[in-house]
Image: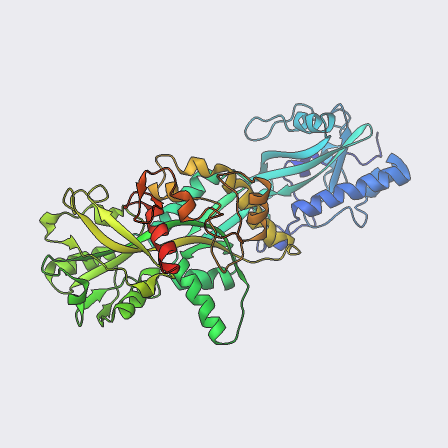
Length: 507
């Protein structure tokens, strides 16, 4: 095989070509996985057309198409012997690298041979190598294919690849103690799978800002927001004569309850008129929705914005009258409070004008044993949480496939999220639940259609009685209303949805 360009094994193990810049300033300086596979295919085409001698000569001479930044091909016999190197690194020509190991002791050449001799006779091989140019251990991967009596491969730097399987998830603020950030970390913990998928939780503000971040910020693929804010977002555009279809929902998730904390002398939300009330961080979902709620109730308060930890202390000292937080119960910051702190949860009424965007809810002793006396129920209001994505067209293969990859991994694992130690709010999630007026992301709808079952089926055009709506879900509870309709327990999420359904129909 002397004079024939064989494998550049040092390249496979991480050595860069002499012509390649060693300064990693931009990922564009390095070849991608797709480009590596394409180069292997160019070798295969020349091999079939011109035979081995001409192909190996072209590789050895670094002919156009066989060198690109850090990328170039290498070839060796299928049994791992008679290895020779291409032009830039002649020192290993003719050497047998069958027993070559990487930094972790992996037999790299033998792994190439395994891939080339096992159906489908192609695949990626990962390894680590001490780069002699930079003196650092690099994460490498090589695309290997069988080529007659040989195998051909091209290596890439894994750490320099576009993050095609990294999903940026905009969630909530750690200062607000909301549910979003916890849910985001649950998603990362369950779904992360090495290079195949990585969920990257991003601390956000929540509410309207999360919608804008999904809409405009590069690197944000999906996000969590409130259904009432999403609906307001659309209504605002429609009032301006605009229709923005750039946001789609992946799944309607759970309900978030309003927690209004004050001293015992505040026995009614109406008493907060003219007083200082913390509405959490500016731009947050709590800030937006509480302003909406106070307006609906005709209560004009003095808005202040601060973290919940700071606000609780100021309520205790009397500097402010109350603090509000919208989050899925039980909330950690609220669970730390007790009646001995001189605080309590204030009831919130559910006026009819809120029916389109809000749900009736309750906070009980089971939710907050130290704050709510046994046997008592605090009435409140809830909003829905929804997972959204930019409505990428299928023609945008990179961005659409990211969200599709997330859906295809997340949806089948929903049962894992509904077990301890995950947040209890996951137990409310029904993937089939729809968000009226909004389009589900195509990949999510396709998954539901493909896995059509009583637990996951989706029928967005069906009436509530025919689909997975509250009335249907209320069956088998054994509790009935005056008209004979069977109801779920009054403190359950299903009951909240049922009340909303009834109110919308004026019943």
